[in-house]
Length: 232
Image 1: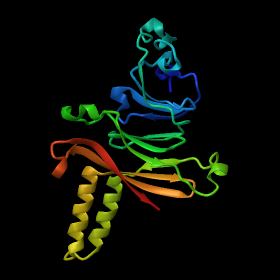
Image 2: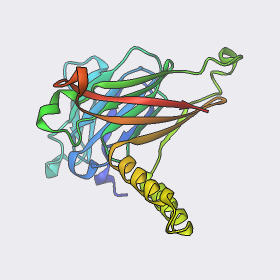
Image 3: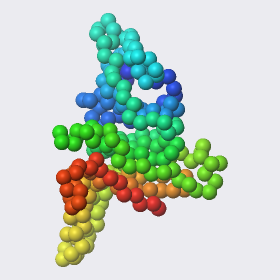
Image 4: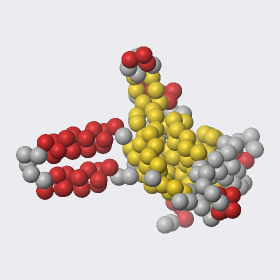
């Protein structure tokens, strides 16, 4: 990597995790967090610059460019604190679709709707939290908390669907389970994203359902989304 492609940003406290937007090439957005306990969305900024984040307490981000002579030192980017006050942030993961952001702090796992792929009617849903899972409460947790660091990965449903379809082809073509399996895989791929979390001796699979217009007694109401938790 060439030095002119590097952007330096000072958050004044150690940063433990950084997650680039899946569309970083175009939106230049990333989310970071660490010992300060702030989940920070940074948008913009230019390569070849060194800047101080506005989240450090200064009135605005201060930027200097070692490549300023060729005009790369004028855009400091914009920082927004999305969440704070729950201790050190150790892990951040942007979902494969870009629709959701999940992070782990000292209280548990949080899931938030991003601003990606939102209809105009749902614009207010951007960066709203849709789920929280408390940290494990296992025996010996306090003694092992420093060792038991949470880990998480978004599950690639496309690869899983391919595996399931291969299995289905091995079944009898007349089996009614084959059609049902394909239908479920297709619906799951369109609507639900899955997050795998491991923390200490606890494993969760978290299903994230998209928001939309409510039905029944919630008809006309719009929701950001919801989560279902499978504890293993």
